[in-house]
Figure 1 (tube, rainbow, N blue to C red):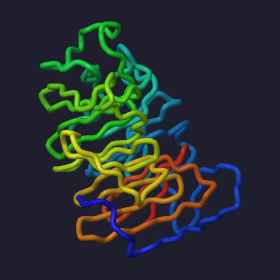
Figure 2: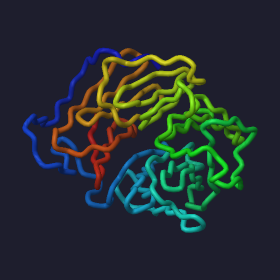
Figure 3: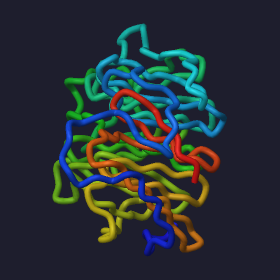
Length: 287
């Protein structure tokens, strides 16, 4: 995946520069999927099998929906402990769901049926041969997750509020790529995305492209105020507060402009549609 290239197609959607009260409604040509279902939606993911996953921080659960808007189930981890403050979610291969929970200071894992599979508590300073789920939280470096990504091979990348980036392999081996207690710390990461050969991070509103081990990073100067990321095949989706940019490896890109008053939280690509998450609802735009 190359860095974002000059745009060749622009879809303007009733943009307005006049400040207005925040709203969760997107105008035509967006079509509503569901409105008023969420209390404080923070992140949106898809599993590639026709399901959408919304992390609702205030409701303390993950809402699982069909692309039609039908609610399939909610996942709250209603065991010990339940979800506390979910801020990001990914659904890998339609097999497992991983949730970054700032309240639990952990990554909660679930099966697609909602069954809890345990917590991963990364350590932002110390390498480990595996993730020890029984180690007391007070014995670890503090790690408040802010963003998650999964590479095509199932490797997880987790960013923390403290500036650490941790890589977790499918067999739960941890590698600290950026330590929270050094100058290499990456403070302010709010979104991650991973491909076969790169990790993309949004740091303080900037899009940065790293290699898979996060040794080298390059700022993409064409994108500012970015807040969410997603990948789909060879497409990279960057969402800012005012627009969504879809970039592909064949050097084409599409830009969608949102109205200034809409509280956009994220977006994903499903087939030939852009699905946009606002604070309380979901909207679809055919591309």
